[in-house]
Length: 232
Image (cartoon, rainbow, N blue to C red):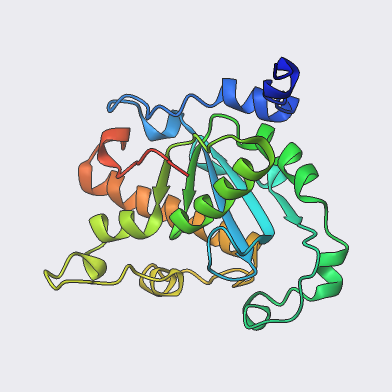
């Protein structure tokens, strides 16, 4: 007879269980004003672009509440990944093996990150990739899915900015972060670092919302935005 104890699921860490209970996964009602929502702008730098194989090397979060960037609450981590060497991605993000060796352990990073993200709505540029990478990490450590609804500033720009509207041609690429900065006359901050790109994305997000508010002649509400549920 098989010992029943071996069939019991290992209990989740407190940080993961608290996140599971806090993050409902629901998109707010369509008439909810965006200025009443707590947003979290995120960005990551990674070993490569293979989800499930490559790992996150650095991650940054920039909270936005009341349509203001909360500078004092910006958080960034460099994450220790054993065996990380110099590769093609090093030329982009500039993180050296010595930086990675001194980073925090993945489990500790998640323990610090999950309470910060909580039930916030996540924003990022081409954010689907960041969330898939984060989701793989969350499943690996806690057998848990990422639950926060998200908004991609590339999708938002395509819907709102004339320069990037749909052309009708198949496979039209999403605007890059640099293209958005150029179009909105914004100087990017510390490009190709998690903290710099997250902060720049937060600024772009607020600039696009301001344009929407002027165009609509009223406050922007959730129903005006291309919000999606995260399934990472």
